[in-house]
Structure formats: C-alpha cells, structure tokens
Length: 148
Image (cartoon, rainbow, N blue to C red; front, side, top):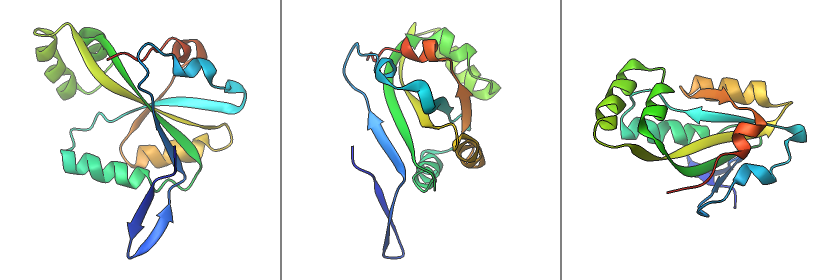
C-alpha cells in the first residue's frame, strides 16, 4: 500500500506510517510476519473522544516521524470478552449494555509494527496522542483471524 500524504500550508509531507487493511475472510495475517526484528503493539483509543477528535488524533498519527506499519484487521469476537479487556469504566459500561443485547461484536483491531530500535520513540509518540498500546505475544498474534 502506498504511503499516505498530508498537506499543511501548501506543503506536502510524506507520512512514514504505512497503513495496511486486511480483509481476506479467515486469513491469519501475523503468521507471515517476520518477528526477528519486529515488535507489535495493539493500539487502543479508550478515550471518549468525539468523532472529530478521533479524526484529529489519527491525522496526528500520520505525522509519526519514524517508519512503522499500522495494520487494521476486522474481527468478530464475544462482546463480553472485549468488555472485560477495557480498562476505562465509562467505555466498559457502554459495552455492558451492548452485551445484554448482542453476544458478538464486530470491530477493527489496530496494530503498530516497528523495529526494536524505534519502539520507545513510537510508543511515546502514540501515548502522547492518547492511545494505549498493549504488547502481545507472537503466538497470540498468530491466532488472530480476520472475520466479519
């Protein structure tokens, strides 16, 4: 996938963030990733930002000054399992209402992939934007299946 470009003050800036969306039903994208010099963090936005604030945060994410990949995988999972993983009480309460109606939830899981040398800088950049990062084990990642 091509780099995304953003324009500010009539100046084009190439993003160093490569975005890839996986949509092949039943595929396991992480099984083909070379983990020898890569580290993967799942990215969460537990803030209760408005859609405009979320768009602004994502726009800022495109300005990351380090080369990295952002993978987006659609998944279907049990609503209760997702709810229990959310540390923010307000967000968890909203999903609690949803879980009483719906057994499964479809959502996109977002991952930042970078080198071991750049992870501290990228982690700080993401946290400064309000994102929460969670490190997952390779075997956990390899078991994530695209489903929608």
